[in-house]
Image 1 (cartoon, rainbow, N blue to C red):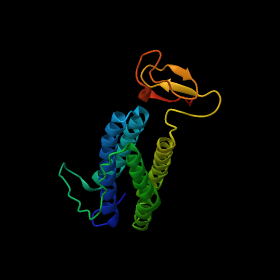
Image 2: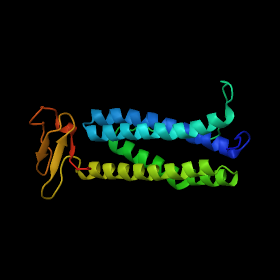
Image 3: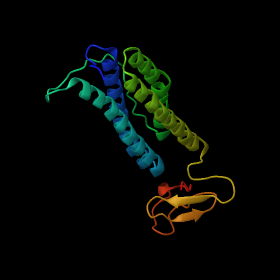
Image 4: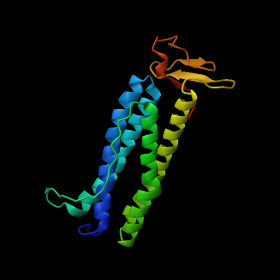
Amino acid sequence: MGRLKGTQTLKNLMQAYVGESQARNRYTFWASKAKKEGFVQIQNIFLETAANEKEHGEVFYKYIAESELTGGEALTVPVDAEFPVAMSASTYDNLMNAAAGEREEWSELYPTFAAVAKKEGFDDIAESFIRISVAELAHETRYKKLADNLKTGRVFKREGDDIKWKCGNCGYIFEGPEAPETCPACKHPRSYFELFVEAY
């Protein structure tokens, strides 16, 4: 890979790194809010996604460091960009804000950054932007589904036969159309239950 110094791709990588870093922190803040509201599953998903964003940020950071740093010196990259600040009173609003941020990344920002990187001869960087966009689309989709579950009262209640709920604390499996108020096994509150899905 060639040197990034003086390219738009360098600025785009730094903007992407800063954006991923800020998203990671927002999701951590919002995870705490979700837990306080009694939505442990949503808390865990915010934390999982925050960890994903850390990994995305590290990809972008490494491209900069591997291209530009040679002897332990620090590099300053100026970035002219806007970043969202949202501290809503509700987990629903936080989910919708998260979905909007993910959408902007996968549908606008990263495809544009990929095209610039390709034009400047950084095919591997362009490919990383495209691949990370796939993850951001999945994040948006998941956040929208969780927001819809909140809006429609489906976080702890579902219709149909053979509905199972799993306690996130002890692993107890409960069968029924809605999660119990407390876990019969460990006595943790309903907030620890989530729909049981076998992913194996």
